Amino acid sequence: MIQVKSGMRLGIDLGGTKIAGVVLDPKGTVVAECRMPAPQRDYAATIEALAAIITKLEGAAGRPGSIGIGMPGSISPATGLVQNANSTWLNGRSLKSDIEARLDRPVRLANDANCFALSEATDGAGEGAGIVFGVIVGTGCGGGIVINGRLVDGPRGISGEWGHNPLPWASAGEFPGPQCWCGRPGCMETWVSGPGMAADHARMTGESITALEIAERAGTGDAAALATLDRHASRLARGLAHVVNLLDPHVIVLGGGLSQIARLYAILPGLMQRFVLADTALVEIRPPRWGDASGVRGAAWLWDD
Ligand SMILES: [Zn+2]
Image: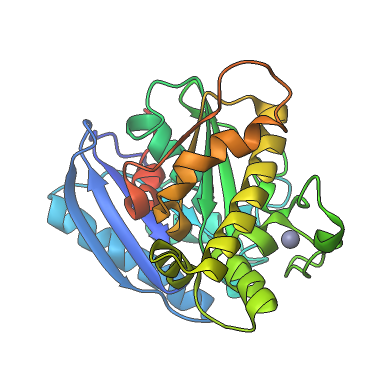
């Protein structure tokens, strides 16, 4: 396999329903982009779709580049196989070696939340900060850790996966908590993801609406919607305070659909303070610079040389 060193970086975001890709020049400027639907429940077709979008991107950019791919779940360093992907047809597959064999090129893969964190730490909302915790609160709840510009990647490939820690400092009504797809009850994801917030609202009000609809209604002064947002912010604050006590990040950057709720940035630092074991300044919580584009950008930045 030959590694291309043209200074161009391809970043691919392999999502559940779509595959998006960009080519970045050395300054991080987008020189080409492309998206296509993701094949459903078909592993061989997923490999072919990845190869096809890479060919298209390199055609549009006029030259080849390094290839980084953000993915759901992660590659187990122990087995080389995909684990924890909600696109379940990827689980147990040797995605890295299969796509490398298809392309005859080296490919780097990382969890999509790790790509988000790397993007925002490299040239986004966390640029210049020593320790960055990037948080996805959207369909699911994930996270990634970047220290001094480098993604933290441990021996199990799960660094930053705070979404499957339990809600800390739970009150009686919050324990044991909703059942999570991972098999355990009360995971952060079951409370603070978009579906988690919507389920909480439905339990309390009997009304099924989405998280962003709840946020919109709260903006018009709807008391039940505001109460749901308050419960959600309290839980997110406790979960993040747990992370701060372990990692002590300089900056936390929020991503995913719920990062659009502007109110979070105003109230989270104050809500977190009583749970953070420090007497100093409030934790900085920032909105993303790149938003959804951080998936492809972070994948591109997996190649830093
Ligand atoms: Zn879980």
